[in-house]
Image (cartoon, rainbow, N blue to C red; front, side):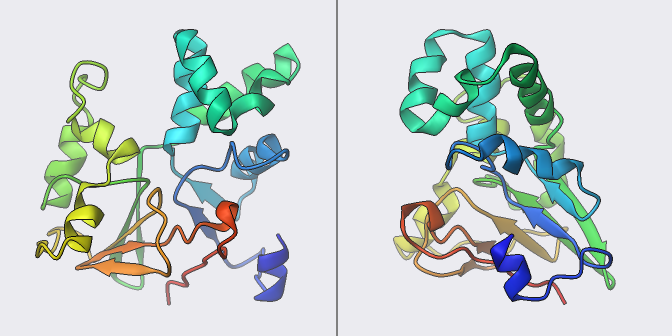
Length: 199
């Protein structure tokens, strides 16, 4: 909110789109999650929102989640806990918007296809728990594209979309891999919070 104030964000005309991991980053995780109720805010699901959901159905996931910032969830009252899970479940895995004639995609972690439309189709497969290389697993947890680029492997442009914004992998500054832009600059780890304006 301080950053939005600094840039003179117009809450009546502008919009923020988060690339996930609204939670597990401090004591105000639930407040951050509740931002999705605001008309000026949209978000996609990150692996930390996914951990909230998985721990609710698989108790063995709870300790893992707590080690990665999730204690706030288990400190909530029963009703607020249920509200948090409902908000996490309501977050889409992928978001696409059209602005000034260009199409923009938002994915938390990775895209393991070179075609945006095939990627969206493969997300619908019910193989999240049975296949660690599934498109859905990659969208929430993967780092293949950015790691390959960091190892100097030439990556292809993803067809069917103009620009894709991703988080999950901490980078020193916004990092472009063809038409993918990684914008998690590690605010939680002492880095800066990055906002990229779509003009």
